[in-house]
Figure (cartoon, rainbow over the protein chains, first blue to last red):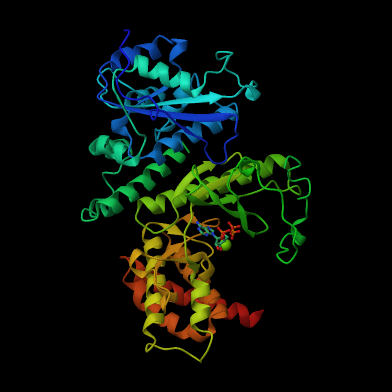
Length: 216
Length: 269
Ligand SMILES: Nc1ncnc2c1ncn2[C@@H]1O[C@H](COP(=O)(O)OP(=O)(O)OP(=O)(O)O)[C@@H](O)[C@H]1O
Ligand SMILES: [Mg+2]
């Protein structure tokens, strides 16, 4: 369990993002790990509701871009701030927000970490104290990005990498993504074979639309 | 910022006041934005803002339907919800079917807003106005003009072919989006991909009558904004739309009926 801290310099591991149109009380922190060796352990912490592991652990092979992931985060924050969450917490809400349909357990299976996940994206939403109207009684002293970073580096046995489109696209399992977001029947997209960048961008737009219209 | 909408209580009759400098308070969704939002248009029903989605470098169009104080609040909320949803669903459907429309980024039907892809470029109307500013009646010898009218007709044909009618086709509701190949300024005023926008009155329909009325509305709008190209547009439309999908020739025949009805009505009125 007590993994030795990786030799990599911890500085660039966690990216903190202030999303547009989101109250400044929410801060979004994202880390990416490749070749993770203890996915089963990490998933187990979620299943046992270990309060030290309040993260969204996402299987990176279901993700195509930063925009897709941040869209899910944005949606989860919107739902959280409106008090309309349908899953236990804001982090599970992120995982469900990646789905184009209302089936929550399917969303966990498809987009969440599984015992065999190799590459993962970790999201941690920090709520600064002025937002204590939030319904979940989370740990009273809000952790800082640096405590989160060291916690992740201690417990995730994998290689940290930047949260960039280049890194994410190297992990994408396209057949899976096409199946999940029903892109297979889209003839004009399939005919775009000669322009990979354009095809990727058009796919991304369809994915964002499916997520935005989930269950609507 | 928090006294939202308190100054926005105007009856519908006085709603369109584009000349006044009055700017309504932004919707709640825009109050936390670090980057600026710009109010682009303010209609009686909806406001269109240019703002950003998720990150400062990604522009988006935000359509916001503010509460209407003159309507019963429960009815108003339901209508707003339905309209936002209908527009978002139709945009997503078109996009999926390969029709060029703005992609949907986010929907909050309860909050009365819809965020979509920002389409760069100018409206077809502006491009045509610039092109038609001087000279008289145009014909087939104007290749750039014929080309853009063809693309307009094909775009409408594409829309109809996937079972969507627009409900408010005008040259303002079509954008000329620059393509990577046509970024240049010289004579490029009519270049670009046609992107149809404003699906606020659109519906899903494959009826010949609905499609023909859609074309008729466009034809009338075109005639009043671009009279110098009216006849040319009719010819191009008939040629180009007819080949856009299987049932298109039937729609064009229906269009002649609709024109006749329109003419009779204007003679009576
Ligand atoms: N996605 C977009 N990208 C760029 N500009 C846009 C976009 N959507 C709208 N606009 C600009 O904003 C104007 C108004 O938008 P739109 O036509 O959708 O609103 P509206 O006419 O007020 O709505 P409605 O007819 O539903 O009441 C457009 O004419 C166009 O100039
Ligand atoms: Mg309009």
